Amino acid sequence: MSSLLVTNPATDILITIVDGDEPADVRAKYQAARAAQPGWAALPLADRLACLRRFRAELAEESPKLARTLTQEVGKPLQQSFNELKGTLERLDFFLTETESALRDETVRSPAAGSPLTELITHVPLGVVANISAWNYPYFVGSNVFVPALLAGNAVLYKPSEFATLTGLAITRLLHSSGVPKHVFAPVIGPGKIGEALLEQPVDGIFFTGSYATGRKIARRAAGRMIKLQLELGGKDPAYVCPDADVSMAAASLADGAFYNTGQSCCSVERIYVHEQVYAAFVSKFVAEVKKFRVGNPMKPDVYIGPLTRRPQIKVLDEQIADARRKGARVLLGGQRRAKHHGSYYQPTVLVDVNHRMKVMKEESFGPIIGIMSAKDDAHAVELMNDSAYGLTAAVYSRDEGRARTILSRVNSGTAYWNCCDRVSPHLPWSGTGHSGIGLTLSKYGIRAFTRPRAWHLREY
Image (cartoon, rainbow, N blue to C red; front, side, top):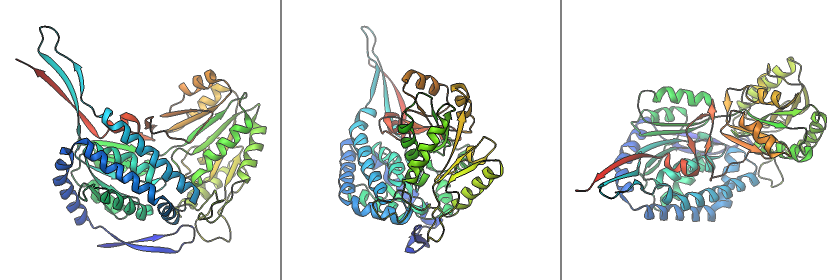
């Protein structure tokens, strides 16, 4: 058994040491899950729903403690940790309400007069699935997978990120105490090598949330295995402010969209394009908004910007800013890590005079920095928004819905926002194009993603 060190990114202080898995443990957990899955799938859906309802109740009851644990291990500001748990309860409500109808048998053809044939579709669980989850929203991105997977009758081998291990173990404890058998939901604890051991198991589906680089490696490992593969990857999400927009509202909304969770969200706004007629006014108001964000101890309720969860990301941000400066960008705010402070803090950073020769406008930042660029007109903005290998979300700010929808219809993205950004609804599918991944979660489509349709041709004699 290996050991995993859990460190607070705000203080660099060791929180605890957790027992991790070895490859042999992963194999044993897979075998136990394979044996347990048929019994779980054979339970009436009502029984599985009852387990998840108890899980929801326990999650709600323990939310204050769970929020503090989340903040301590990933550095998410405490109020934002509370927000994530509250939002998770709402997602659970969606799954608990909609799963029965999403998985109901579908009769697509009934016997007509003189014909004995019935055509029917049922939804069959995949079997045993691997859920390799992320640290930035461990409750959100985890529950998007393991909740519908369990409700559909699958067993889940759940690997929380090594940066959110305590949260992953808390989720496991609550699911088990709610009645989900321990072999049906089994945590796989450890660093990347344990994730690799999980991928070696003959699972029936792989569901990963994380970076494009890691997702690409997983896709290569899964190639030729003929199993379900779903990759929820990164983004370089653009927004465009039209000349008719409410500039004050757009600035406030986009500042929050760029810097919430310290910019560590796949759907954080990472590129802003502003029509040249309102560019100067927007930049002024945007900078004023960012100056309001308090940086500091994430356990304090009024702190908005916490530390980066992963210290190596500081180097990524430094390189992007240095590259931008060399190529003519100006830094209006920030531009470096926070001096004289323990932990992995980075100053909220705003750059202007940027262009697409700069890394900051092309490569995912995943931190509290943003580039703002002028656009000549709507066509120019569309060209700039589409100049990316990613395609997760895109936003347009305008008083004219028709104008916004016309622009957004020409942009490659899985999600489109009008006068809003950086939000996810359980009622709508969450997906991306290009380097933002394949497959989807959420909505009824996201429930059915953990099943395969079985076609029935039934002839009565």
